[in-house]
Image (cartoon, rainbow, N blue to C red; front, side):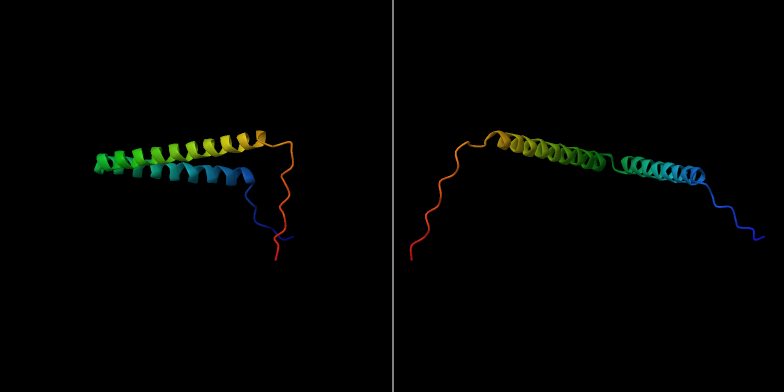
Length: 88
């Protein structure tokens, strides 16, 4: 009989994927710490700008959702007046 190589199970692949994600997170954390150590004022400015941008994004979403909900309640019960055709 032919012997086929054993295919790794999904659990083994999941463990490997989790290990890769953990390594990537550690590398990202190390990068952030090094950037903070090298330029604290620049990192503070970048962090402030990021938080401000995220705040503006969510404020915009809340405003647009509010306008949408408000427009749902502003329907009129009378139909619009018909438009007269243009005369030549």
